Length: 386
Image 1 (tube, helix red, strand yellow):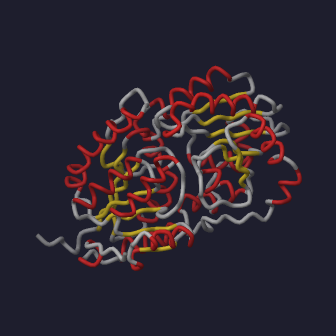
Image 2 (tube, one colour):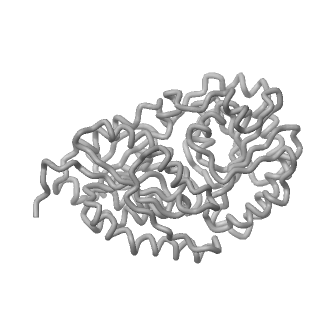
Image 3 (cartoon, rainbow, N blue to C red):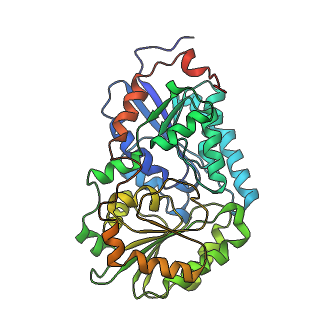
């Protein structure tokens, strides 16, 4: 039965992790301006759990539409439970997309729920659009990202390097759009918590350095996760600084990291399960250095001219700005890198740092394409070019 052309085009947005909300929030605000578009969030995994800050509540507070919420995450946080959690999500998602009347599926990044969304959308013959296609990263996430590409119909790359990689993967050129990274849009527009409010809210002394730590487990190095976090905690103890730690995600090994953080925290340490998006931007604007292996040190930190000490292989191969210092999981290396990152020499070096992931104008470009692209056989039937 042909679709009613007078009906709003409905976009199902799949979100399983806290970081993905940064991709989608500015896009949703742009969708809300369009008479021809509608959307609904399908939330899963970390968004639903107190352990990870119940970030679904943040989405509700922002008055955004949640179409469905799936509690799919098994306790244990190991390789086995990761796979079983994804299987639950895959079991429920087809009916959710069908019942909500989705016309398109929008994905972001490289995590497991996004891969499941791509598989389900493609098999339901719904156009799948993928934000940040073609980037390189380590971990199983890097493999998932490129698998998502093969199931997706529309590829939103954040830079030319990524767009070229998608083309090399055999994707047709008419599917690839170099639009930048949408998670920069709100920040570059100044939609962040003001400095004075950040100092007050996080009880920070503006005359003392602040180190922000975001470190996740590397799934293929599951057995080393505890030692790796020990090295980071050992390093940051060497600094007379205020330490803010945003706790890790739900990957295998996450329990080990949290155990190490709890064991090593002291009066200078604050930990958070989740930080609202505006507050997070405000923190990036005031802290002295970001330490860990989060993609935020590579994607968002350059927009704030913020030094980032990137530890280990989780972001291996990813295009980086000059704000990034790469080290291995060794305390002495990390100490040396943090000292250099907070030096006047390094601040001078990165004062004109450009962000290789765009200038904060991505959401409008993405939504223009989602609104206007023809949903026909040319879009839905993929032809590989190799």
